[in-house]
Image (cartoon, rainbow, N blue to C red):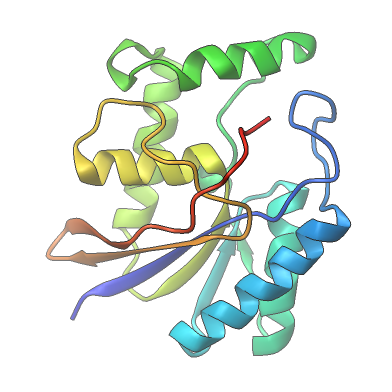
Length: 184
């Protein structure tokens, strides 16, 4: 029987990624988190919940945690694209350059980050909801589709992408709702 993974992009952050190191959710982000929890409840019953250690992902998981009476496991391998090696004030422009390029030209740091994500999700033996980030979801979808592009699609805040794992193979079931605006 296939394992189902529900990849939820965090709700809108209270500040952009290039301005604050670890922002929580905005008011709209909290609404998106509640909507995502309601949507997930329509797709599955209580299953494991995993979240990135970053505040915006953890806060997005709260409505589902409350509905199911379960606490999310915090797993660093589904955290945001590693950027600690980039000066904070240069992160936004660096990310723009990375997003416009291909996996085949990325640094060892980014290659290892992507492999860590793929190893973690591939090891899941039971259905799980994962609250994570734009680039994490892109890493997974790009790998499944065989795309070398860093950005395969633009998952909207609070969107849910569904994949399965069967016999060690990842399969995209449904891509989440796409964002209308550019990621900051």
